[in-house]
Length: 259
Image (tube, rainbow, N blue to C red; front, top):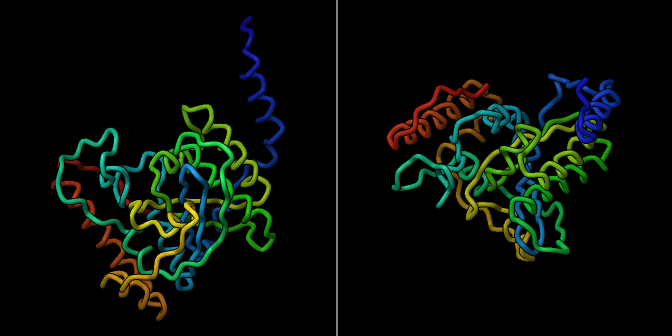
């Protein structure tokens, strides 16, 4: 007879208790509220912006997912990233970074941390704070949201639902509880730190003034406002393909596609 460790027995018991809640609404609408989430040693900051109706659904196709390659702004484009097989060279700008810099952001929440811990833990806590704020609003339930991060660790752990680090796992469990009880699902996109609109909020600073929209961003937003979803998808997929080509030129190839 094999005696299971107490931690394993606890997880199996939790699974049995939560089994009635293990469901997902595949038709849950995607909100058109885009969030920027960031953290610093001092605290966390979250800002939000409204995009054209229906555009959130199209951007959701380009969220970071489990086993997705480092593309659309993931770590190979970050300065000094760990594990990158790409050589040095000009850094391509990212889809969510391009979009973020031209949006009109407004404050959502700010918090101060009592203790300084690993920045990855601080980033994950900031995401949890957003989840709690949405869970407190009944009208926000049963929807999908797309927060933008500059932390590949946070996005990876959130996409997998777990982490090899115990401290991140503890935060992930709290986040999962909010999702199970409210039907709120958070995706994630990646943007460069210097284009994170919430960076100032995490450091008791301000929100950056919107920059002129890049041509492809202006095209996507205009087409979305006019309801031309064929054009929206074509431009987004062309922009994605451009980033794939930049990766290929720097020695990285993959077969992942947005869904």
